[in-house]
Amino acid sequence: MKSAPPRAAKPQGLRPLLHTCARLPFEPHDIAHQIDARGRYDVPLADEFPLLIKLFHYTSAKHTRGETWHERLELFLPLDGHTRLRMGRQEARLNPGDLLVVDNLKLHHVVDFPGFDSRVVVISFLPELVYSLGSPTHDYVFLLPFYSQTDQGPHILRAQDPAAPGLWAAVHVLLTRYFGAADPALQRAGCKAALLDLLYHLAGHLAASEVLRWEFLRQQQRSLRLKPLFDHIRDHYSERITVAEAARLAHLSAPQLARTFKRVAGMTLVAYVNHVRLANAARFLKETQRSIADIAIATGFADQSYFDNRFKRAFGQSPRDFRQGRVPLPP
Image 1 (tube, rainbow, N blue to C red):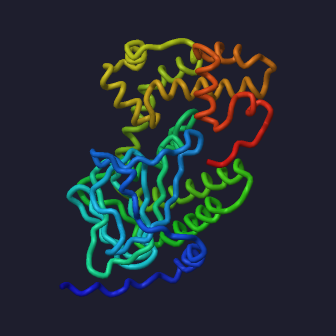
Image 2: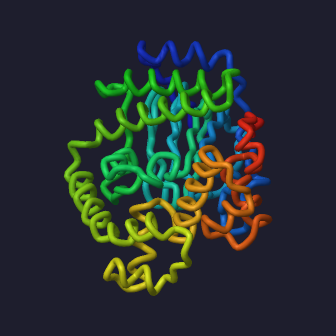
Image 3: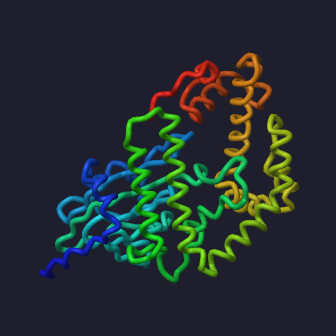
């Protein structure tokens, strides 16, 4: 039998994060019940705040085997011990403090080996948390490390990199706010600020990559191509728009539109239109005395019942509670 590898040294700058994590519960990696027959690892995320942080303790004796994939974007940060994660044909070998950008759509799994024993912070989120309705183009920079994966090797920010201490500090703040007790709205705002700080350090580390620079230029071109469509939706969000009409506005074929729109907006055309409608509905609820039924029709929803259902899924509370300023319960 192969002997266990020596324990990896932990960088000095990692200590504040380790101190915080010492007070938090790490659970065994047991996700088998959340994996379907295709290997899809499904974890429901709140529409209004699609962020999930899991603290896993991996060991040879206890972790879920098998390859998985998922739509969520994911960051993987080991705190102690050597850790290996395989994504497609690539294998990332990680030491404490290394941050891996998971290629989430490829089948991936943690690789077992004798003596495997590591705690890992896994940060998952949907792209619309960072870049969606009303986002300026430069916000897409935060997502470039996830959307520019190549066959040259996985995106890893190593613990020895000068950017690592800033990244660890951002993770430290993120965990403190995510697992802390606070007003839900304030807690979510604080988590998002810390997540953006984390992604800023990551994007800065990878900014020297020619691949990323070209991807950003391509993204700007895509955004300009879709501008007439975005302007139309902004001004006519209550009206029905077909895929064919949307494609004509962008001067694209329907399949091209579907691919380009998802890359730019981080969601489908239908989801984006609903997002715009709900954002305007929320504004009407706060700024006018119009009835909820009237607001539903004015923002393009067929009836109040359907509107109530969509609004509650997005905002975590009914339109009536939202108007009255009641604080939603945390998920």
